[in-house]
Image 1 (cartoon, rainbow, N blue to C red):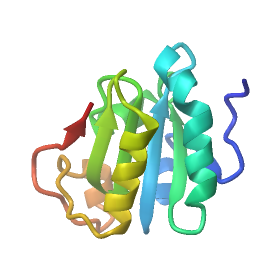
Image 2 (image 1 turned 180 degrees about the vertical axis):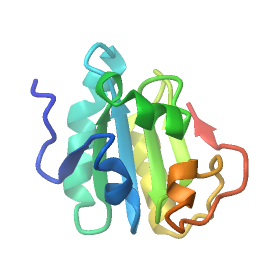
Image 3 (image 1 turned 90 degrees about the vertical axis):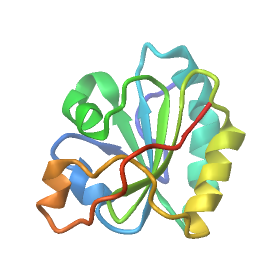
Length: 141
């Protein structure tokens, strides 16, 4: 299985991440090549990226290659799927019990206008004029 971004998905790096998530609804797929649940869900997440291509940007972050992004987002375990709106976290689905149905439900809530409930926006995003979100997180397992 290829670990390069499928059509409809964008590979992010430390250098490109902020620009990729700054505007609109975004699903961030934080994965690792040695993460069995990540690899098992990857084809289903690619299918979601295709299904929602006109509504949401899907950004892939290879965790071992982009540790700074993971630290900034406070991602401690894989897989992690973060729903962002205009650079602010709205929801996250994480852990090896995460399912594609959990991720799709979170995408639907994001597109339906769910309020931001994630942890505060990392400092480097706030400096660029992005508003902070209330503290706390909404983890789905």
